[in-house]
Image (cartoon, rainbow, N blue to C red; front, side, top):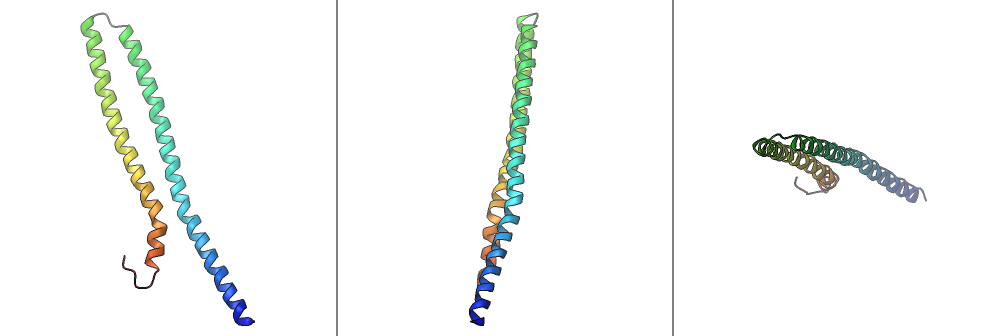
Length: 116
């Protein structure tokens, strides 16, 4: 009976270790998801503000040439902002993927005979 109790305790301990590992791995994953959501919301807000300012400038243009210059400046700025944002989000998604696979890598490294 004592042997069975020890096995049960071992199973409980293993289950708790797995739960603790999963919870620890999930925290950075959640943090990265929140960073992506915040970054996306911030970019959307900046983009809306930039578009509104562009429309105001365009409506205030005194000549056709001025309107073309305002539009050109806006598109250059928008493109540069988009590329920067895409790069930033790409880095965040890469981090998210790494965090998602950490528990698998950790579990695999504990398998006897596994190479990492």
